[in-house]
Structure formats: structure tokens, C-alpha cells
Image 1 (cartoon, rainbow, N blue to C red):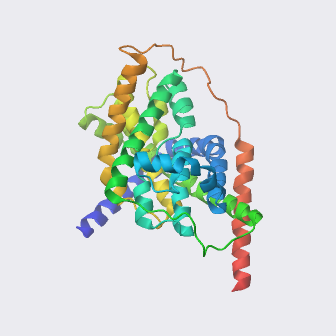
Image 2: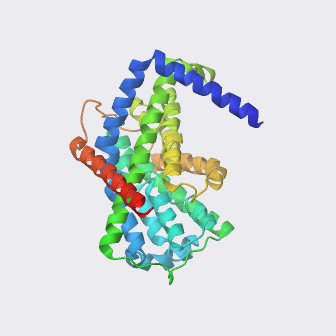
Length: 358
């Protein structure tokens, strides 16, 4: 079995390398587009939130700030006391902030790996900024669609929390006496630099997956799969988004029948997002439990979206989307490049300090 997997992996790698060479122009265009997307969207929208959430966790401010919600969340969802901050922030910020916060909780000794993996089931999902602006407004031209998708993802996470917490009973410690206390300034710098490293890993994965999709598409592989599955053009875009979620931008603005499927994809995040999170959390968190509950998550996202469409839109959805309208204009390329240069300088400095100590 191991030899078969290796043989398949080698064949797929050679196939993609062939595509990278033959269709280098399409791959180069995809890489450039993904780099621009990272510089203008990913870094500006996630870096500050990741750095702040890590700082709040490391200094203990998050636990104090969200402590009033702990008892209510424990009674309703059996959420372990002290986990309210992670649950609330992760469902507001979106992936991968929740997984990153759980990683910090494990490293600091507030919880164990198994409990963190359970909490990662419901501290995961796209944030409202992405769903409302990028999906609701930019794709379909209706912000309420983005709100419906966000409510569906949140509802699915609430149900998952209520069920899995009663099955696995995750634990969380409120006070750690043996944790080394650092000055606030040191915690700030550490939170910023580690967030920069995480963002760099995420962007690297996004660029690589964009190249893979471009090569596979140019080689006709995605078209072949679409024919075998009898997918329409919009269905093919949904299939691509399972690999890399930003491919949702290619969906036709009037494809409202696909909304439950779009919601399920947003709840999953795509293979690229999962790979990004694995790069961020390393060996701190495993994803076996996540994939075990993935079918249930998908059904919940799909079902809640169907329900909210009926509640908010009834039997019809107004068609006034305009693909030429720019809902949000973001121009953060230069600041993002400066941030990347700062990260490289900090990492280089850390390497020099390590060599001096050795």
C-alpha cells in the first residue's frame, strides 16, 4: 500500500512538473496573481488579527476579557471554562486564527493536544469580512447572501460544539503557575514575529496551490474530472474552490442554486487552507478528528444555508448583482512588501543570534 501511494505521488509530481514546463506562461500568470492576492488581501486582513490574538492569549488578556461569557458557553455548549475567548475570536476572525490560538494554548500549557483538536472542530471557519465582502458582495452582489453563509457556518460550529464537547469532554486550565512571565514588550515582539512567520508560510502555500491548479487546468485534468462528474461551468468552479477557496470568484453571479454548496465549501475552507493551517500549527495539532467530523460539518453547513435562504429570501432572490462594480478596493501592496522584508530581517537576525550562542 505504501509503495502504491509513493508511485501515485511520483506520477502526479512528474505530471505537474510537465505542466509547469509546457504551460509555464499560465503557471507564471497564476503565481503572479496569487502573489498580488496575498499582498493586497491575505496579509492586510489576517496579519494584524493573528498578531493581536496571539498577544491577547500570551498575556492572558483574552481570558479576562471574555471571562463573562465562559459560564454561559459552558452551560449551553459544554465549552470548557477559559475557552470562550478562543471560540468567540476564532468565529469572528476566521481561519486560521482559531487554530493558531489553540496552538498557543497547547504550547503555554493551558490545554492538551487532544482537547485542542476537539476545540479545533468548532473554532474553525471563514470570517464575516471574507464571506460578506468577498463572497456576498463581490460575487453575488448581495451582502445578505454573505450574512446567510456566515450565520450558517456559525450555526454549524455551535451545533458541533454542543455535540462534540459532550462526547470528548475537552479540558482547559484557567491558571498556569509555572508559565514564564515575560515583559509586555517582549510578548508583543514575539507575537508579531511568530505571526509574520505564519503568514509567510500561508502565502507560500497559496502561491504553490495556484501554480498546481493552473497546471492541472491547462493539462485538461480539471476538465476531465468535470466531465466525469457531469459538472457545469459553475460546478467546475466550485470543484476548484474545494482545492483553493478563492476560485469562488469565478462563479457566475446568478448561480443562486449553488449557494448551499458554496456555503459547504466556505465551511470546509479547501485543501489549500487546511495545508496552510498544518504549516502554521505544525505537530501541535492533528487533523484526524477534523476529517472524521467533516461530513457532518458539510451537511450542517448545507442544511443551515437552505434554512436561512428560506427565512431571509423566501422563494426568490433579487437579481441586481453587477460584476463591474468594485465593492472594496484594497491597495496594500507596498506596506505588505515592507512587512515581508521586516520578517526576513527578523528571521535573519534570529539566525545570527543562534550562531553566536553556538
